[in-house]
Image 1 (cartoon, helix red, strand yellow):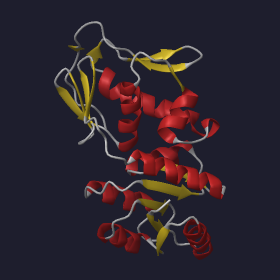
Image 2: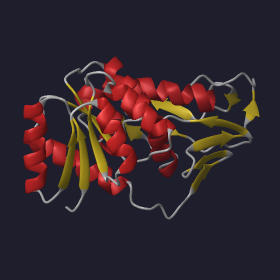
Image 3: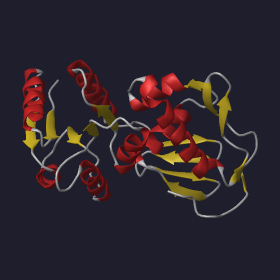
Image 4: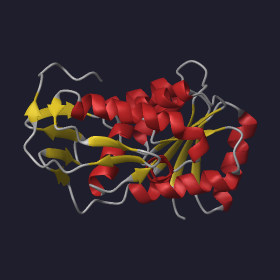
Length: 239
């Protein structure tokens, strides 16, 4: 797999192991030892993917990811961290990470995550999805329902996109874990519930009918509405 990766990792031994392993897989690798240098390198380099440690000295991984996204950089970010709490996973994903891998991890799993993220950046033939009067712009990552527009975080976008690609199809938590998070179901059940609530708060809270429904003993479904949306309130959607 021919790719150019940027590793932002302050632990020298870990950085060396990652670099050697990835280079043996035919990848080109650049290493930055702290957040500030990593941010500068990411800004000026054309990388296919960034491996970003969360616990960096000075400017941490959350700051680096957030700043890159705010500046308009769309390079996939795989965040690496020793913290396995749901709160930290959500914070990392909200900051702009596309995926999250907890240390220690098997190198084979790291390669699988890298391949999955690389496949996802292939050019989209479709630039807009629509279910009823809910639309999703795949270019600017904004959703609109009944003329009301709201912005999505990176993972909210991926989750809504997958729902809208499979309308009226019950989706299990395990499927969502594999297809949206590319992870292990047991480690992400709480994260999925958090993000379902985020989406409901944005696309359903102030509207009728509700689109995202729970399916008992299965997971969730995005229903195609049988009538135009009715706006219950125009209160700002929380981000």
